[in-house]
Amino acid sequence: AQSVTQLDSQVPVFEEAPVELRCNYSSSVSVYLFWYVQYPNQGLQLLLKYLSGSTLVKGINGFEAEFNKSQTSFHLRKPSVHISDTAEYFCAVSDRGGSARQLTFGSGTQLTVLP
Amino acid sequence: GAGVSQSPSNKVTEKGKDVELRCDPISGHTALYWYRQSLGQGLEFLIYFQGNSAPDKSGLPSDRFSAERTGGSVSTLTIQRTQQEDSAVYLCASSSQTYGYTFGSGTRLTVV
Image 1 (tube, helix red, strand yellow):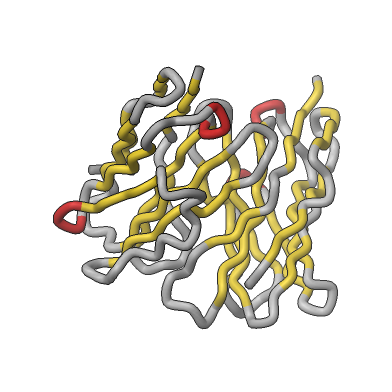
Image 2 (cartoon, one colour):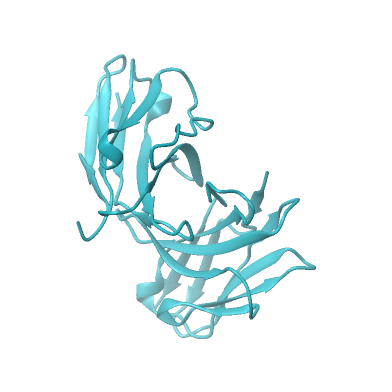
């Protein structure tokens, strides 16, 4: 079984400032890692995913995340945020070995970009 | 279709009534998932369908919840005798190669 911890429930940041949304996971097996974004009244949209290879993963809208196996972390970063990045962000993990690929989600981080 | 379609988008029901939520996945996607998103919380896995295999129902919170998937395509999540704690957004997702999902916009269920 896996679990995901998103350490910050709310992150306010000014426009054009950098941001980091933290995610830590716990698993007894190797995992795949994902970040999703949810805009108000919409479903979840995949931002980026780590399956294998380079630990630095680039996604849409200028976001990137780095997989750190020793620290079991997968923090999401953006060097300069825009008002339009205001949304809820979810980190998720799935078991590499299982066939179901069921995702376990964190509780989410609300990013609010202030003018 | 182009995306995962869920209906209705909003549903208000009286406590004790039954409700049906519908999910129309992306054509050709063999895997279909239902999740529940309660206010201020993450996504809670409910049930998973993969092709013709028996569904994984391990996330259903009580026997009032059931789901079916007809013809390997459309799925219906049924909640019987709704309770106020059932109020949440119910999200459906489908997947083809099992790496990452495509989510629908969800059904916001309010039990009054």
